Amino acid sequence: MNTIKGNIHSIETFGSVDGPGVRFLIFLKGCHLRCRYCHNADTWEEYSADQRTADELLEQALRYRSYWGSEGGITVSGGEPLLQISFLTELFTKAKAKGVHTCIDTAGEPFRRDPEWFGQFEQLMQVTDLLLMDIKHIDRNKHIGLTGKPNDNILDMFRYLSDIGKPVWIRYVLVPLLTDDENDLRRTGEFISQLGNVQKIDVLPYHSMGAYKWEKLGYRYTLTDTGTPSAEETDKALRLLSGKSV
Image (tube, rainbow, N blue to C red; front, top):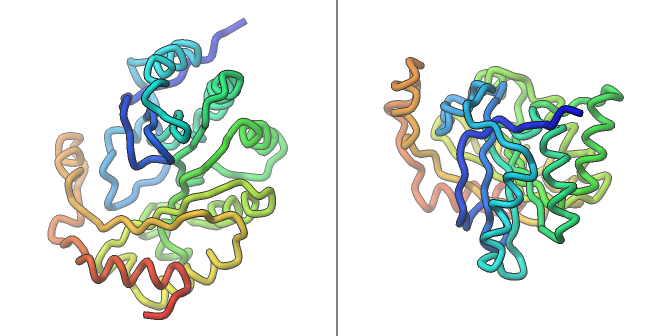
């Protein structure tokens, strides 16, 4: 029997913003989106020299369990964790057997309804407590311009998670002239209001801290002259996404 190994990008042992409590963060390699503002471009390629089994990662994570408190646990991010769904399911199945809170940080791009993949996803959801999901853009064409991919299946994943009552925290990166249009934000807020499982909405102001990775990898970074939204602009966006008046 072959042991599944995950392609690992990096590990953080004391994460505080990627789910409730203190988290053990596992960043996996591989992503099909090419978000223009991505700060982890070095996770795009799927292969990693650092390949580990679920048992190896869980053993390492549990060393820090005393710091997690009642809310903490393991968050798997990326890259895109759902590209390694078999590995992720094995890891979370073993984590849940130890009573560990499990969380996935995902953009939802791999989601599809074909029986084989969807069956795996249903199995994964049985051992997943929370998902942190990005809404990159509500408009299909603008989503393609921003990420290189359409958003139909991503919005479908949001609806499915709502249907099964799986808790979701939504993250929205606010990028001047790309994702800050008031009408688009209102549309996004209307979409979110139709979901019955959203526990939290976070607006993340754009920053260019990952631009150096693009240069190092030989990619052209197109947002060099884009500024960071103000606190007032960020607050306004949050109110629109939350369906509140501005």
